[in-house]
Length: 166
Image (cartoon, rainbow, N blue to C red; front, side, top):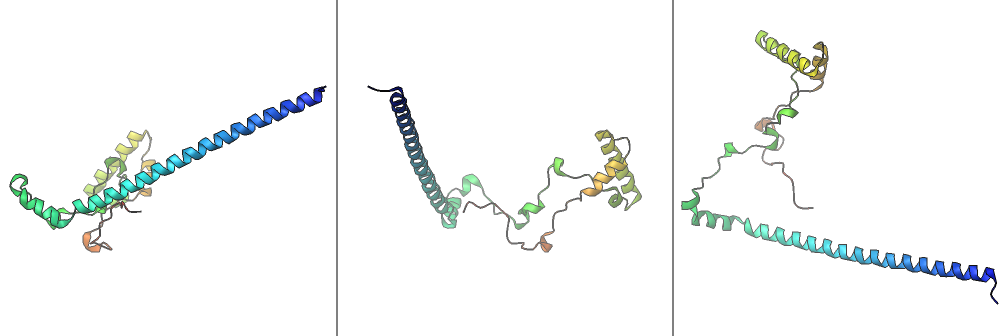
């Protein structure tokens, strides 16, 4: 005859076997998911490689020159002048990124000082500050960015762009 202790041990063993099977089944599902994701990643990498190769073929200068000659009447393309190209550093900033000018830099001429003090007063009133000293202190903390002239650029022939390659 079975005692109570034996029944408890049989119940514990059954519960342990059930939990073990459940954990094993979940682990197998996760492994299958990992394999599926690895296959998707490989497919995406292959697609990227294919698109890079296609881009290299599509952007060949000889091919583009033939297309320009073939469709010159319809497109009426003109060569780009060298003065039309700019560096990324020379592009203007957004108005929200432009810092408030420093009042001391603007005092070069009397007219400039009047305009600068009017601007700092406008900025101070817009910020709700009772005096202009706070606006002047924040203006001094931010220098006015100026684009680098092309002649003084460290590497004027290279344009800073993002790269597709890894």
